[in-house]
Length: 281
Image (cartoon, rainbow, N blue to C red; front, side, top):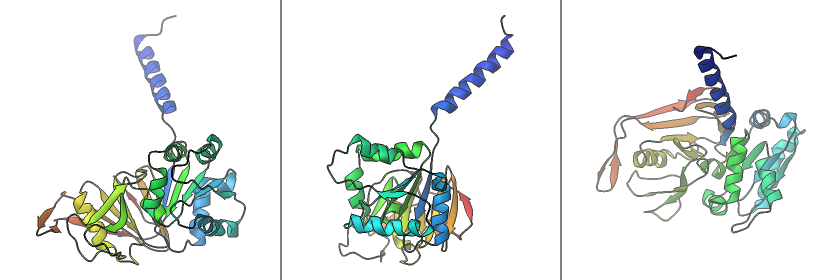
């Protein structure tokens, strides 16, 4: 029996749509913490969003830290205080060729948590390796990827390293808004429409993030304060924790330079509080 053309066309479209949906992996979520203390409600939300309260395990990646064992211990503590979840440390070293079983442990984790330290140190270990691929595979299969401080910075594709190119002595913030001073490298790229900065309000990192959105005008600048986190699912973002998140946008992709100093017009700034939601589009 032959189907009428209209019915055949509809069935074909439905089949194609189903196949397309099946072919697309379930994208996970990001939980980006600005550093500092992690309130109990933040850890509880991490657990529930990752599904660890229903089983499975989480993995802590401490490669940002110069003392990875201590970093794992202190990252585990808030989870142990709540109890009922399994979360382990998984350390990789630069140049290491990881065993398949170790990479599988990373791929299958419901939660991947990247500790603080030095974001450049972390990316030196994972960039263009099977470790980075495993993080992406976990994310593509629905895992929650979280990070605090340096672990927040690595979420961006354009990653702020924290260094100034023109002024070598480290400062927590920038004293100038000038061209060619901001050092950036390639991060994990789990969020590619924004540049992430951390410890933002506490350390007054406005000049640094403003410099970033003038030099990279197509990207939003998201400054996450200590004890605050941004939960990102698709294009939707929610503020979690106890402090603010500041978002800058260079609406007209504006930039002028005179004597090395940068200027821009119509830069938009929004400040969000815990419980606020907004679109990243």
